[in-house]
Amino acid sequence: MLSILSMSMVILMISMMVMLLASLLSKKTLIDREKSSPFECGFDPKSSSRLPFSLRFFLITIIFLIFDVEIALILPIIYIIKFSNLFTWTITSIIFMLILLIGLYHEWNQGMLNWSN
Image 1 (cartoon, rainbow, N blue to C red):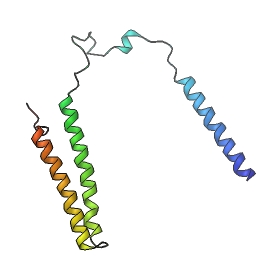
Image 2: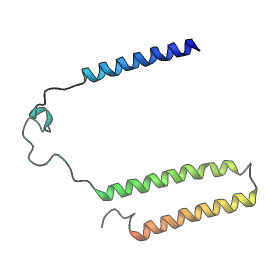
Image 3: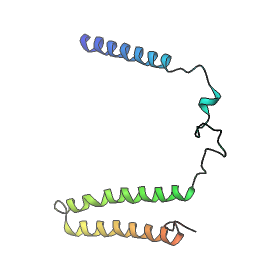
Image 4: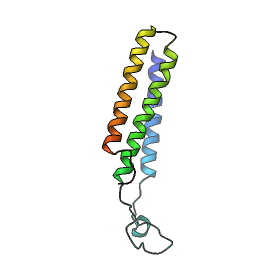
């Protein structure tokens, strides 16, 4: 018990020293206007360096992530057929696929799948 306690104290002290050393060495005291401005071939930027955020692209990304997770949920359904009742597996699979198709129809109906307006 004493060995575990002493070892955890040593690990705690080493990690605290490393965190302190990292925070001391990473401090930047001098903020230079030239270093903090965007670089455009040595010239001052002609326009804003920040591009406007596309909400349409964000929505397409969210839809892709949702369908990606749905694919990850569909793949184990094939493996589970060996271990479950065929009737229960069929009903569960049909309900799950129906929910996915209703969601896809809703997104299609709302125009979320059209990239251009």
